[in-house]
Length: 496
Image (cartoon, rainbow, N blue to C red; front, side, top):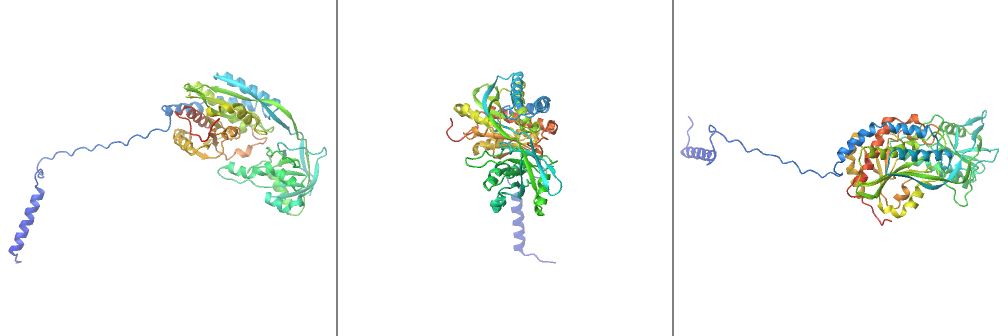
């Protein structure tokens, strides 16, 4: 048997005594005694984050989105414009009819004021045009569209060998070798998520290709159409005005299919020969007009939010996406605010600008005539990228203003995850944005816009009603928020 020392026994007893004392401190209960319930811990909710939008915006957002999605009038009015009137080049009789239609439509909607603003516009006419590949092989026509502001050819056309270049660097390497020839810029527009970024790269050849080739002695210019998809549909568009001392030469766009075929012939050393005939001419300036309608603000009627689009179009197709959809969104945004009795804090002014495509005189005249009141323009927003599903807004202005706009986008959740992108807002509002007015542009899905842009294919059937209605909802909701904010968007610099 193991012997335990007296000291060990004493240490054991002492340890037990301490343990009992610890367990049975005053205030403690034995396990067989009734236990009191532990006090309930109530978690306090975190303080509510202030909403970055005006009171009542959630309800207004629901009403606007629901009303826009139920709005069949937007498609009816688009058909009235693009089917009933058709192509609307600046300075044309069709454009005059479009002005009359817009004026009558806004008056029908019972806006607080409707008026026209006289604008003098430049006028360009296409005339008869054709291009013929004379060889190699049997003669065959090329699909072409003259570029806006181009000069015409002599009556019998221009017949010359064709030189194909890929870009301006390629042209510079050839230099004087293009003298007396027709130059084809075969720059291929690339597919990407933001097709407007691709367009900016490709459109420079349409914009200044003729001036660059003329400087090296070229007789005429052909430009591959700025698009990634084609059914042999060439795309027109404006050229840069010639500077003093530059020699104007005829310029036209060709389809992707023809540009690629001409490239293959040229690469084989077969030296294509082309006859280009164009009846293009610039005519004297003519009178036109911007159309303006307003919903007057309930508290700050002298402060203005401008929304708008350009009423004109190119002379091919009927200008459905460019920019019939923007026109009817502007008209319907004003009508929806009125019909829903959502009278905003500030006034909303809808402006349908004239001759954006070939001269921008509508936007420039608006700035000239309203220069003294631009300090009361708290924001301007434009729709000129088609009637596709909304993806967000572009913004030109201060960082503080951009942060405030970013906070509003949660209200657009029923329309998808809309984003705010820093960048250009729109051509027609650019003149007043340059004076310090914060500028926004509606961003839509750009996947297919340049399939139709500036072509004969830009027609009513290319517009999907559900997508246009969602774009209308986004456009109208942002309009209401800009006009309803307790404080206007911050802006920098002295304002006129």
